[in-house]
Image 1 (cartoon, one colour):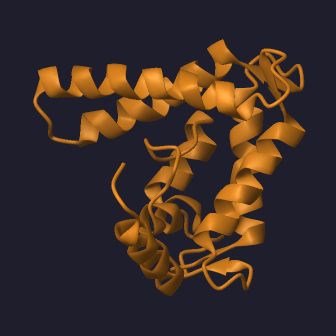
Image 2 (tube, helix red, strand yellow):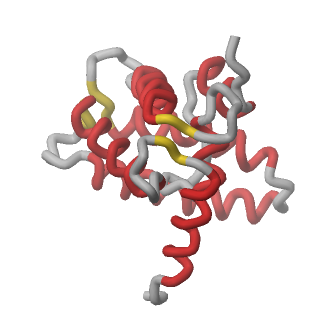
Length: 160
């Protein structure tokens, strides 16, 4: 049986995807999607976890995700991460509220056709773009070298 990261195991056990921030940093991306523990993420690993996430988020199993489902799923992941963060309770609550506001913004961005639901095609398009951003050398595998290159590019961007 492949080794799962703690977060990937939680995805399977709780039906909740990993990580707080929607845009993943490279090492967090690898941690969250590396289901076989080899220190890198293939597109197949990524797609498998994303598929599990979508099914887990579609609470009513109607084939699409509404804002309530999206935010509820994210709130569960966020609670786990904040519980492990060691932050002061007031800082945890501040971060929780900020992140939940951002989850609603992300929902609106993912709902490309603005029908109030994220269908599988919209979700998959978002995932493909996220993987492409992380796969710096475009070889179909996100490695620590890709993560470092992506991080370096991000750090070189002018602050807005």
